[in-house]
Image (cartoon, rainbow, N blue to C red; front, side, top):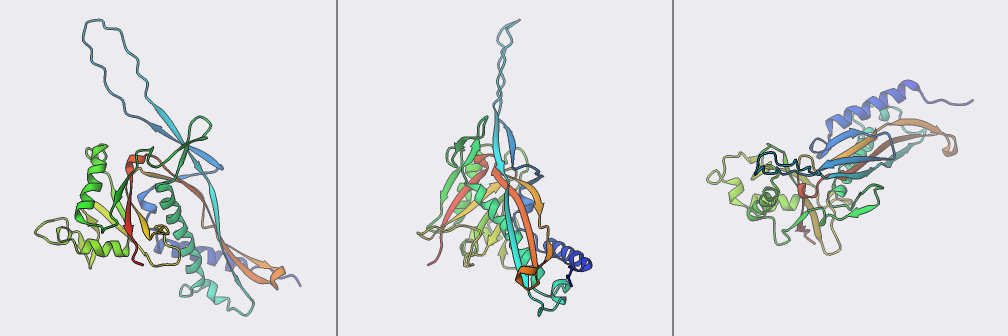
Length: 297
């Protein structure tokens, strides 16, 4: 007799992934702009700055000006997380919020969201009429702050100056963020200018963690996990990032659409799968800075 997936079970599991996801928000999702996406590629439009023309005589001829329009390609990518449960597994593990199955699928998808945003920080972007012109991070105005000798108060000041040099955050109250690893956070804890009330009234320290460093909200990622969000190269140099509001745009086509199917080819094991379809692109290089630190060997 053909076996069918229990509809109520599938609905319960879908709701469970959604709830778990809401409880375990990504660390970067509310720091970037998320827009709906229903095509393989979409364009992100940009406008350059414009300067006024001085009028020096009566009836002076009008001087037309060009404002530079730009566009960047945002390409959708697809990710899946799949687990199998054989018939010996208790069905309750799917709907019991204390079990690990729903949590494991949810966490994997949300980590992938953060990973794509981080990848977009210094990735080459595609521009031009046909979206075939490449623009590197450095050519886009992105700066790199060398903190391989240690992330210090002075390095945070350098980051802030780099943003101010491009008039970012000087007139508008924009969010500024610093994504670092746990050992870089420890370096900041040793900086008395960030922790002592003699130097700051920012209330930057909360429950033993620095939540804000000279105006930058601090976001800490694990540095010793198997697949770290912040990449480390073969020389143990880690790429951390400082960025502001409007730096990254995310196109979201499908966000954790979980489903449960029976796999007859696997002795009717239940397949639990979540799908994430999204893309991310840097909108302005000056709004992103790479901060290189050293990973302890």
